[in-house]
Length: 217
Image (cartoon, rainbow, N blue to C red; front, side, top):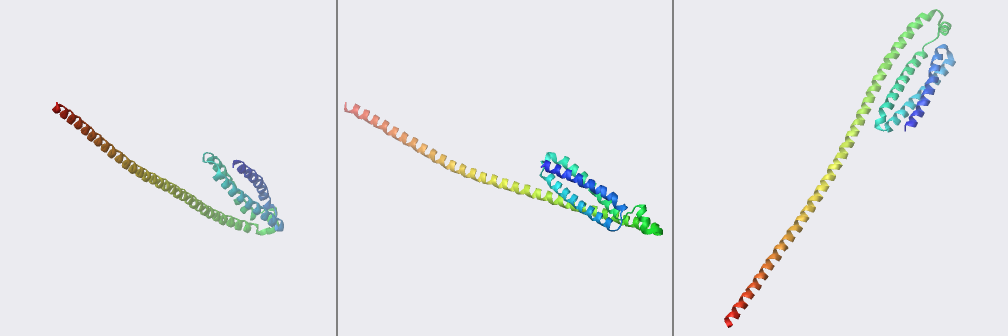
């Protein structure tokens, strides 16, 4: 599992390096060339997001004792992609001094104000998006915890049921053993009583035989 994670890391590093370079070039371009580069960066950022999702899935399959290290690395990568996305949004409305002067001429100052206003709105949207994402993550984690609790409760319920079944089987076996012992004890008492009766009869017969023998003399 860790080898797959490291493979995703390598892909992540390669693509983010390319994206960083392209983001730096965007403000220097205009027209169709800029549009094409923006689309290309947007596509690569989507690939990076998919890589992060794959890495997140891999971390969940890693043994618990090793998971914190990978979670820390994944968190760092998520922070990196957030920064890239922020830089990308800024670069889309940014122009180098040369391009801005060519496009706007005397209206450059007004464009700067508009650009600042757009950046402010963009940052507000990003903060709202992060809050929504954090809320979603909390909801997902809460659902996972709930599922684990339900799973544990189900497992405990099965254990209790098995223990009850074993207890009933033990009670049944004890009842059967008790009946067997009672029957054996009853037969022992009967056998002893029979032996005593036979002994008494034999003793009485001997006494009567001696008595009649002495009387005959």
